[in-house]
Image (tube, rainbow, N blue to C red):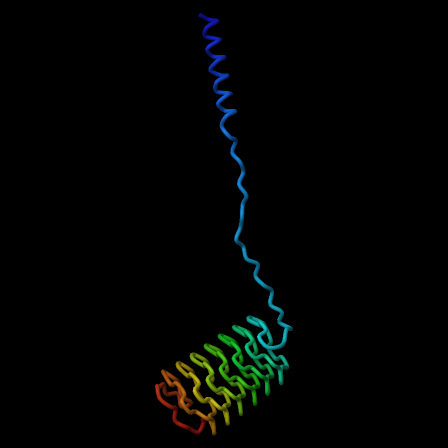
Length: 193
């Protein structure tokens, strides 16, 4: 019986070994990732359509620059010089343009949603069809600026100067006027504006 038991164990082990050889081994599968490389922004780039989002351009000299269609979302342009710059259709969403010099600049059709333009000099600036919703224009100088068809929904114009500014066909909605009153119709011309 001992020989038969040993033979039985041997045959059983051989069968298990044969079956194991017939089962395909686990094949490692290729691992793929979907990581996307974040493009590096060249903050020294200039020209139409450039991407300058998030760049620190505080105090930069950009007079007469051609940045039409540029992406300046969340850029820091505090105290920057953009006099007579072509900023046609540029995106300044959330940008800091506080105390910037934009005299004679073209911002026609620009998106300035939520931008800080407090204390900015915007004299004789073309802001036709610009989106200034939620922007801060407190203490800004908009003398002789053209704001025809601009969107001033939720815009803060506290103490802004609007002397001789063209305010035709503007969207007024919850706009804080130069006199501090929030209203949804044209702001009165006060001593500040």
